[in-house]
Length: 170
Image (cartoon, rainbow, N blue to C red):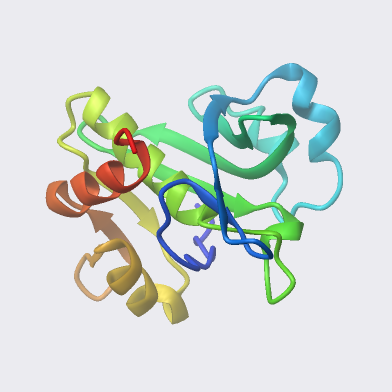
């Protein structure tokens, strides 16, 4: 399992255009076969390879009025009593000081929590973090480290907060 290294820049109501601070409506949708052409370059992870894993579901974050431009990607698995985030990544243009949009990472984690509630897993989500980001995920997502490992879990209360932040009617 890859270690999660996405930076949660800020929790927003959706995603926010950095230049204008405009909040834009988004959708998290299953990745379609027509999206494969957008996965060949510009991504750190091998998303085409991830699509070959039938036990995982891949989702894309898109802006409502730009549905063909992928803002971020998420790979989820079912742990039987929780959702596993295997991979999560911002599009290259949403990383660093010159990024176009903020809130992508938070939006994708909120979707994972929402998916957990929909499966009757009480919002529980686990992931394996890069060691230098454990404290960041504790603060930004309300995640907890499991023992001395870098495996982290988002529990019901924090998951509820993320789902309310991103998926409640505004």
